[in-house]
Length: 73
Image (cartoon, rainbow, N blue to C red; front, side, top):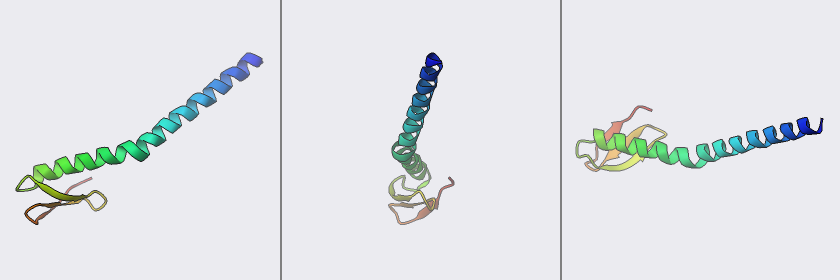
């Protein structure tokens, strides 16, 4: 019985650790990846190739020449 309890404890620790790593990735790493992808997409679609700003929530980027380009998410 003692060994089974130890196995259960290790399983719980493993699941909690995996959840913590997933939460860290989703909260801190994923937004920067998403913004980087949006900036690259905007740079490819802007006529001048230069991006002034990117609004990932609205899916719109503003080019340096003043035009706006809608990007799909």
